[in-house]
Amino acid sequence: MIIKKLIFLFLEAENGKEMPLDERGKKRVLREMEKFHSSTEKKFYQMLLDPDNMQMAYGILFELDDPYKGGEYIMEIKLPDDYPFAPPVVKFLTPNGRFKNNVPICLSITHYHSETWSPHLDVEKVIQSVTSVLFDKDINPGVGFIETSDEEKKKLAWESTEYNKVHNKKILSWREK
Image (cartoon, rainbow, N blue to C red; front, top):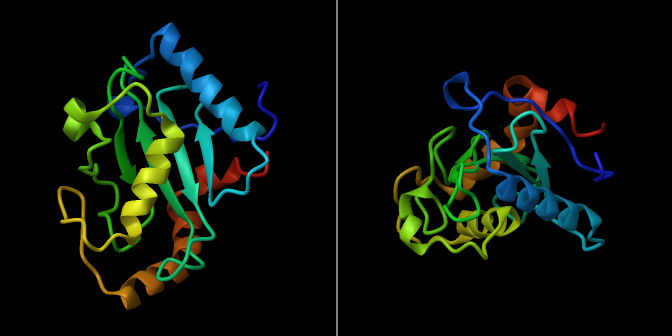
């Protein structure tokens, strides 16, 4: 792949069927990944793309502040066939105390609110937006949200690395490649 640090992983699409992006969507996603990986700016996350199913993008969050400090959280971003003209389905694959694990999240940038989506948004902005909601206690919980104490979030942060080694090891296996 042309992107030196791009991390690949393989996860099946919903129902085991690949749901291909159109050619414009594929080019757009590749440009987004190339832009991200060519940046020298320090980030608190990584962006990943599954080369066998370009509709599956992932964010791995790390180096976050309290109460998530020390945690590593994997976020799945499933792009629709008509991306970037429609919003993705977003869910966390690592317990974090703010969002239910493996349940789609309801935010203005997700598939629940296609009326507020803009083609100017991209995978990186989705990762940044969802991450900001981790810390914003003033946002009213919606679909996919849970409320836990900071102590519970700290406990989940501590356990996240081991959780990912067991439940998301395929994703982690691609990090160093």
